[in-house]
Amino acid sequence: MRILKNIFEQNKKWAEKVKQTDPDFFLKLSKQQNPEYLWIGCSDSRVPANQIVDMLPGQLFVHRNIANVVIHSDLNCLSVIQYAVEVLRVKHIIVCGHYGCGGIQAAWENKEHGLIDNWLRHIKDIYRYHQSKIDVLETDKQKVDLLCELNVIEQVANVCHTTIVQNVWKTGQELAVHGWIYDIKDGILKDLNICVTNLEEISEHYRIK
Ligand code: CO
Image 1 (cartoon, rainbow, N blue to C red):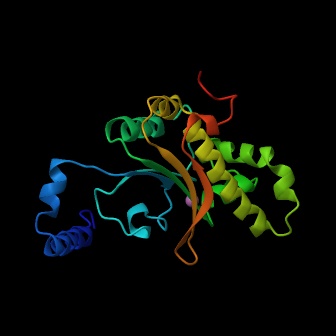
Image 2: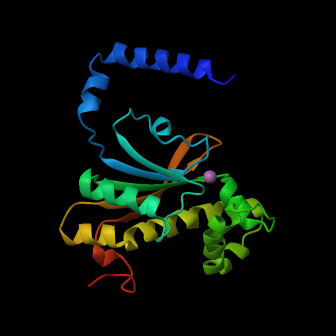
């Protein structure tokens, strides 16, 4: 019970399987990581970053938190972004939300959940910014689904507004920020067709001169 033996057994089998396809896989990865993508997603166990895009260790640099939120004072998320763009020089940052997100649902409701309510306040704010677009929808499901999408769009903007991303664009380094959403009901990713690639595409209000 205390040592969770089954997990260690599963791990050994998995490592063996990987080595069967590529005997040097772990040796090569131990020398360096060179991911092309930073994934910012939800902590939800049903949205495991590497698995849903069928990528191996080494291909994705990952940050996950409840409801895939990018907050300007969150040193954890900001450090991940900085390391990813400045040191690893990833070419793409993907903010990936998902339908059926418990965090978004909780922010939508008025029940108290403890500490987490402070984190989810950022999502309540997004509802307030877009209330007119959301309130006209018929069902609660439609409303929460739209809030999931709007949250992704908002977080893409938050990534772009960071001094880190703006300064990287200023140097001419190639970096695209994308907004995607995943459907836990069918395993399919949808591109929300937002892709920000330079300073001119962000609101002047946030732009550093
Ligand atoms: Co979620």
